[in-house]
Length: 390
Ligand SMILES: [Ca+2]
Ligand SMILES: [Ca+2]
Ligand SMILES: [Ca+2]
Image 1 (spheres, protein in one colour):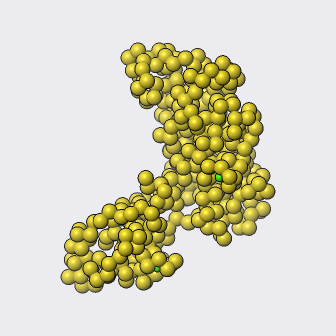
Image 2 (cartoon, helix red, strand yellow):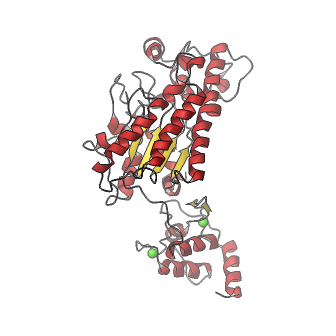
Image 3 (cartoon, helix red, strand yellow):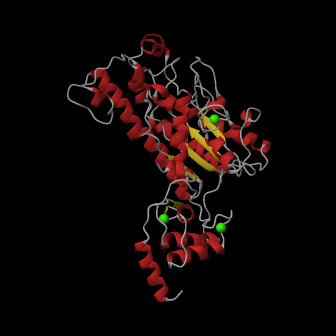
């Protein structure tokens, strides 16, 4: 392409900043023949030169840029940046994030879907945000999404395979990370590839939920237990290359604000929930409703219990989740776990629908749906899912 041609493209790019419809896949397949090839490169070039008019749907297929840390963040425009990414796709210099070959789950009672339907103590692995497999609920789990995207290549979890893939055990805390990883390593031979494609990890809720603030797991111990589990993942050839999806601890605070007016929860359920540092004395003594829904800040007039609950919220925000994030970053930077990522979901807010009405503590089916959406949209593949761009 000569200089005049490049100038023309740049000029046309400035002129063609048309917002695109949000209903197609941003995959580079402009002519929509199922492959990204030289033809798409040609069509895209012609479009930018004004020699071809693309439909809005074709333009959206072409909208694959910009790349942010290697992951497409389509911006609603088709321009030169998109053409360059398509060029790299066609020449093999770049590949989109791909679905894993399979997916394992590490976790606690949330990872078991405990009480998701309101029945105390009952596990519901089929509803879990990660490895859930029920097609008849509103939880679009990560497992179900991968199966939809890659039905031939992805070895999905289902009722028969669940003992292989879901290693979560109710009551687990970070001390249990190591043996849950070892449990995965012992199971990978039961998959077609013989290794782990993806491992989701959601632990820590039982470290921060305690009889008092002082009884929370010591942060230094929490970190060393976390490192021990990551070391086992990094040491094994069947897990070290897997996508390690470490979820931050969710904002547990909001289950109090969601349910504190519920008589059953206050009087019959919460006294038996091992999270006294959040749930003791559940009467709302925050200064006002703005304060109640803003645990990041104290307000004049907040009572002692309100202040204690907010302290609980901020310890997770400022101490435990940064450990999960920063330690993992060390393993990524050192090359020990190159496909790992910390997923921050602390902005996801539970309201009354998202907490089951039996134990008033664990996510309901709707809560797992919320978790699934939040976790999915922050994965590499979810970031290019049009449903996540709203
Ligand atoms: Ca094509
Ligand atoms: Ca673009
Ligand atoms: Ca489902």
